[in-house]
Length: 532
Image (spheres, rainbow, N blue to C red):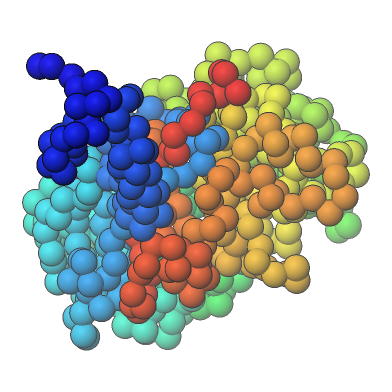
């Protein structure tokens, strides 16, 4: 191919001159190519703002967020109610590579299942469900009200008793009704109490079969924790069963319950071994502090081989603790300093499954020495001596000061610290309930999640009136996220409210629709943390 000289270019016709500009961009066509490049850049920017990029990650869940989130978030995909064949979206669950939406079309409640490993979620099934409240993940299946759904094929199981008028909230014990109350799944069963006044409850398994009965007339009910070898603690409420509310749960330890068989044990072995943890009451009798704590109640600490119970966490004094077997037997009583107890009180070890959890002995060793074998963990401690405020510690050294309290009335840090996610190097952290929209009191349920840069947060937290939301990764605060769940290392599924996200509606050009949007958020492109 012969390239033209200047004279030949000037004497050529219109079409030939255009051809010369295309094949000779550095001589005759520089201005044309500048225009073309500018147009391409404009389209790229418009795509970034007004469209979604799709998910192109590795669809792996290692238990850690991608450190690239420190560069910000980018919209991978979005699902509106109409996209799912719904009038509104009420709930969502993101788990094990699946995304589930629950909402209504007209008066019919519907659940929709997706495979979220594709560029955009691929719909698997569309199932009519009942109106019973509650949406829960139950040992590999989705429970919507009284309808259990298999994620892979949408096959349903029904047949649990109905408890009309019941409302389930964050706790499986919330809002007992005069028509009976049931619970979210606890291990392999869920409970239905036909008449709360009698205290007789029925345990139903995943096949919708009534398997055994539980007498709760002694004002005790199983703790909502993962069982150890089938056993969970029984917590004493101190109130009659018909008045039971979340605030009345956890006033003391009543024993342990096997969720597979219905067998229960008491606390006799613990009381007999109480030793130095006994206290003398005003009437001359003695009480075991481990069973009836008289200070702030702690969640019972779960180990791989059993439980650690204590008499509470109080600044300036040591705590009595006891390690017990899964069924509460073989108690071993000892004491821990305040600093040691604080290390394990609200500790969450990053573990892929129960086989990676520390034993009770491992936990006590860590409490006493600070030495451990696990790779990563998060914990909640007091921000400073004498303070009531909470700081989050990631991997033993990354401290994040919050505006939450370690103990706030009857709510402790376990209610909001369990869902904290972070990158392997702790450069970015997702806290599920941290942001308060109002300077006045904001309940825990109304707090919103925050994905933030820990380096920036640590540098700025000593500034007066510093708010953690200022340290959000780029783009996060603009979305109006109401809730967020990591599905893969590089994909966060979030619920976005149109009413609280004018930026999202304006720049993405969304048409108004009732209910929320569900979006997938991937890391924005940018430098890796190691070269920042």
